[in-house]
Length: 303
Image (cartoon, rainbow, N blue to C red; front, side, top):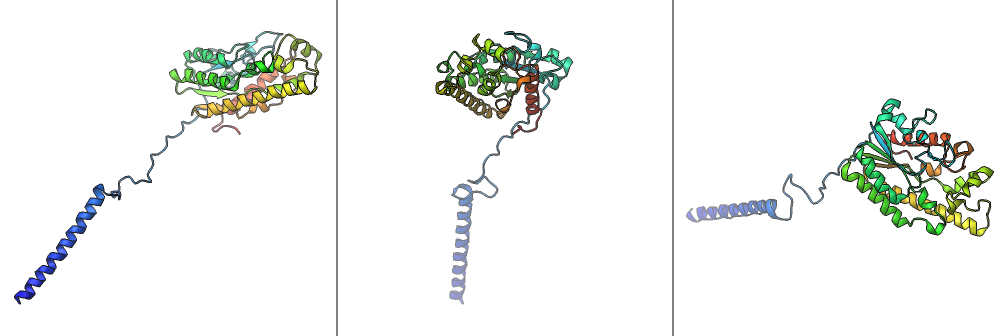
């Protein structure tokens, strides 16, 4: 009996030791081993991405930066700005500018600002953006790049890398003081299509001789191989500029590029200035305002 009792105690002791060892191993794994603790983070868990800020389809103030198109150049008289018909901030009732459509006529008069300048290139945009930021607008419109392609010759066009650097600096300038302001970026127009539309007008061609966009418009009736190659080179540079605008804008969560809407738009004779047959007329300015309004008021970018 004593031996049997002794053997029973020994069996119990071994079983108890085994159970304690298993418990200790499990506890070790839970606290510091290769296995994850129940309910704790696993190797597959990833932090949730930050939600993309919702686009405000009804901003209450806006500023415009850019070049002669945003100044309404040649829309009212030859070789002159006409900001009252600007697609962005104009007050003309026929144009119905973006500011008027978004803010209403009365508020647009006090809460929209036009800092664009005729002849401006992308290198000028950071300075314009600094002026715009001082107004603290909820939306900034950008239309720039045509003058970077419209130079004395194709060789004189702004290099793509410099164009990118200028736009990136302009965006940084805005973001330093206004991180939440929305930005609408219009594509550069198809300058070759504008040449094609205007080259049949004798008055327009006379104005072109004054030096408007010589890289594209010089010798407008010349269609030999060299002239065609020159115009194609200018067009290719505009396409490259638009790729830059798209790329830089996509990296900013509050920037919306127009998807090439202005570049693709086919301006006809009524939508081109009857002074130079190259810049938008009042009708053309109204079409630009329509394109912008459609993009700004869409919940998602219009394809």
